[in-house]
View (cartoon, rainbow, N blue to C red):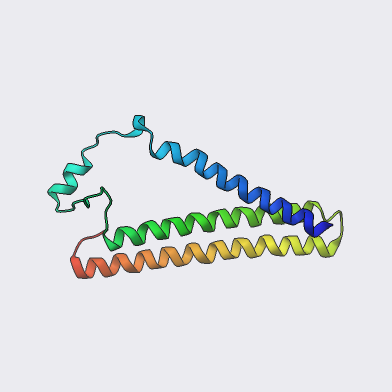
Length: 140
């Protein structure tokens, strides 16, 4: 019975995160009140950066950046679910030393995984910045 309860908890939590993400960020991204004319479009056109016919940039670097940002967001959600699940396991251990230790280990492993992913992102961003500076001569 314990496994079924935990599985139901994880499924409900996942649906809540997905619903919150679509409900919160979807309307904000398309809200006309937030569509300010900052002049970035004209600056981009003067710099030689034009948009495609459908209004979306098809540049490989922009697409890669969007994919990386989406994956990092997904990693953040997975980390949050793991931390909440580890806390749930810890609370439901009821003094059982083995279950408490398992929950602590899960929490530590989630934090270590997040730190590894963050360090890899920072390292790649730094190295790509150096490479772009060497090739183009522009400091990002």
